[in-house]
Every structure is written in C-alpha cells, then in structure tokens.
Image 1 (cartoon, rainbow, N blue to C red):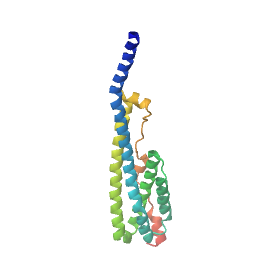
Image 2: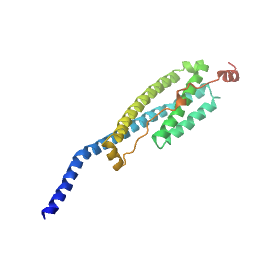
Image 3: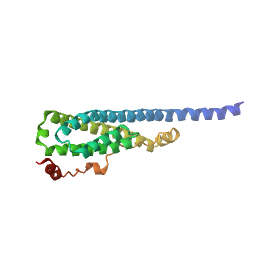
Image 4: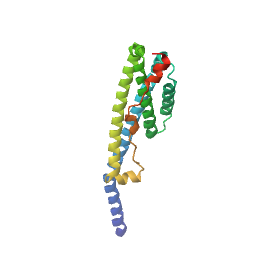
Length: 196
C-alpha cells in the first residue's frame, strides 16, 4: 500500500506545484486577452463615430462641388469596407482607405472658397479632426495592449501556457505605408471645368 502512496504523492505534489506556477499565468492571459478585445472595441467605436460624421460632410461638400463624383464614390466604398471588416487587419486596411479618401475630400475644399467659409463644413471638419485624434489614441492603446499580450506569449512560462491553451499572437493595428503619403490632387482640371 505504501508503494502506491509515494508515486501518488509525487503526482499530486507536481500537480499542485504546476497549478501554483501556471494558474496565475493562465489568468493573466485571460486578462490580457480581454484587454485587447476591449481596446479593439474602442477603435471600432471611434471609427463608427467618425463614420457617422461622413455623410454630413459629404453632403456639405456636394453642395459646393457636386462634380467631384470620384471622391464621393471612394468615400462610400471605403465606408462600406470599414463596416464590413471582419478582423483587425481588414479594419486597418479599410481605415487607411478612408483616411486617404477623406484627405482628398478635405483637399478639394481648398478649391472652393465658399465651402471653406461654410460654418457647417468647418464645424464638421473640426469634429472630424477630433475623431481622427481619438482614433489615433484608441489605436495606440490597442497596440500597447497587443504588445503586452504578445510579449507574454513569447516569454517563459507564458509561451507554454499560450501553446497549451491556444492564446495565439494578435495582430497590431498598423497603418499602411502608403497612408502616410500626401495624396496628389490636380485642381487645374476642376478649376477649368467650373470656370474659376
């Protein structure tokens, strides 16, 4: 009987030691995973907030620059892609498209002095700038949470827990290299067509 108690005691002891070492790390992964999910939802909230401004902004610009159809189509397409994004990578790509399209839309206003002076347009432009700032902060907070999570999946003993319980590496919300480039806008064509 005693010969069975010693191996059983060793197994129980190893289990207790493993639980003491690994249970807190597992709980830490759950907490970090929830934080990443929370930060992702904050980005979605801010993107939706900006998206709610866009129809009013487009309608205001259309009142002054109705022949700028290509930019209005680009904005509608980017907005549709953003609302249909299934993961962070798709959301980041659609956000880059939206940011580029909005930059071109705002650049168009330089060609229309009456639009630039319109109080509704300037108010919406200022709200849009505020929304862009909130998106940047939410993106940074998300990336910080992902960094902490990913760091824990790669260090010991976290890498063991991550492997055992499928805590996979998460993607950062990264801007595309081309989104930092200033879009080229040729106002000469628009000026000729409007007679200005």
